[in-house]
Amino acid sequence: CSSDLDIGRLKSAAGILQFVGLHAAELEVVHAVSCFSRLGRLKNQGPRKPALSDSEVFQDLVALLLQFVEAGRLDSQALRAVLVAAAYLGLVPSSKDQELLVPLALCCAAELRKQLKVASAQDLASSAWALAKLEQNDAETLSDISS
Image 1: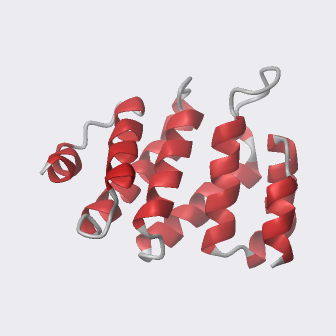
Image 2: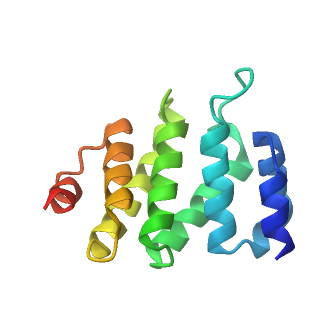
């Protein structure tokens, strides 16, 4: 898929958001997760920019991911990728970041609980780390992960 190649070449948050804005109607789960994950990895690179949560395109991407998670379309590896990216994006949380990222993280955690038997140890450990970084002490998920 040419979209996969395009996403792999994007080197800035602005480029990723532009891609998402141009292709929003056709983004599949893998593309949405990939873009969100790349945004998480790029968060601390370069000069400080306006918060991503101020971007309507970013808000739309988070809403799309939430829809995909609620529909059960993410496997444990994709859930982990979203949680880790959310943690990186929320390291310097503003109230607006929290309003966007925490509901997504909690939804991912709830979905991960349904997939515990098929999730890898890495998926579980990284997801638990991400929830802790987001200061979400989801006792039910953390208890399920540890057992």
